[in-house]
Image 1 (cartoon, helix red, strand yellow):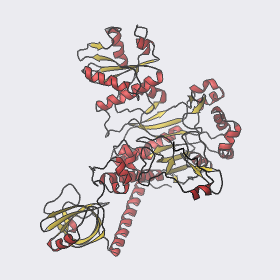
Image 2 (image 1 turned 180 degrees about the vertical axis):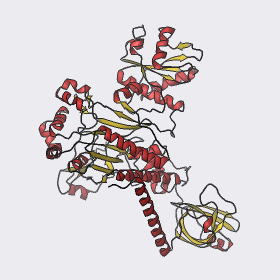
Image 3 (image 1 turned 90 degrees about the vertical axis):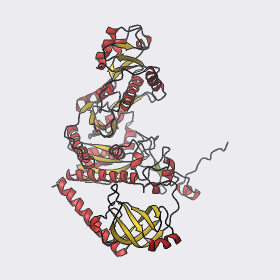
Image 4 (image 1 turned 45 degrees about the vertical axis):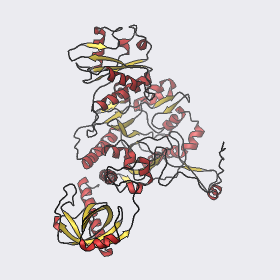
Length: 616
């Protein structure tokens, strides 16, 4: 029987205390330190202690010198008296020197309430420089003067900063909380291979040449998807990993070529079982990390509703301002912009009716940017006195504008913003404008968390450039049971809904999964729908199709973006802040200078011949 969550946590804390006691004994034996720089308090006054760490600051006042000594656990002030000043003159201490210092804990006369050790200091009797240090290329403080590239180049120094350390501590705590919860629910942590077969169906694979198998390549996994399904076939009905995954795709602030996910799979479950289990995990993590009790069931929203009312499939529900379709209301009134549009859509920005012409022009310029791609912006000012003034008064009278008010649910004092154009682009643009207005109006508070489930995604989407249907999620996602019959009719593909779900937090997708196909005939039908011949399907996925013939149970799962979840919990937009050694936006590790060329001997062993670039 699985242990209770409380028992697991208590056991973990007991092991942690025992581990720290062992480390302390080792430290005492080696005499590098008896305590850390974050643990001394008034209770230790009068004790002789030895500390070791990095010099944060040196402050000299006549015949005495104060040194702030730092390690992973905190900062302690050291007092070097007159008897040591001559040594300090001969052997001056600099920033980031590694030193060992022995002395007596004393009460500080000028206490520092901003640090836990601020009531005490160490009156130093002796010290030793363990290693001198060059002056760092940037200040190792929270308000550092180092730019992103410089800090990435010297990441081992950047990791000493308290702000970065707190991010990694949060990451560790999130991982520990997830593991504790999953253990209590009977999940097993099972490792899966990193060197696998390339099956290019989604993002690009990173490929690895095999020396022992000339002209053949491994791929690094984009996820452990097929392995976790095979584990379900093997009877390991509750699996998880906190696992590295790899995708060779263009990068941005929330994307890295290698990333980590909490990967989970369960057997003998339906969608509701998955949602309930991982909603509880999410609530547990928030309680452990943020101290927040989420005492309500997460709202559920269909993909169709998310697209209609928010313009995207990861809606930020911290604020309303829903999209309202106005197409049928505003067309055939003689205004060509609306009459020619596939979609006319509006939102009501709360309390913005008093926007000036300058502010409205600035918003118009914002939607005209290439990233948004609109040709202009229509507005209606709904005055606090009930008056209506629009930028298209020539074409629409007050009675007609009142229909806009009703559709957008605008109230006196609101500003109605309207976009028109091609269906897809206009909806995306209004979604972006809604988020921008939410930002400007202070409605996207990072300390407010609003999770939800988005369900009933389309199973397929049509790729115009390839002239074929592709899987919206992945080819192992099952259709909704009531839509399986539609798989036999190509004309019905657009109507088929997937048994899939995403968990969204504050406008960011942090996890997604599905109930999987577990019968060979349905999986073969899915591959055929994606344009695979039986031979191609067998070549790429014969191992999985074969496994389905040996008693595959119904199963489903989910994967959480671990880096992304940590960044949201830490109040940051970039996942790089929560990864110890991240890549930059070009996919480079500027600290290691990777990727890099390899020597000719390695190339020869791998039987790889490089195409030389023409210098011209």
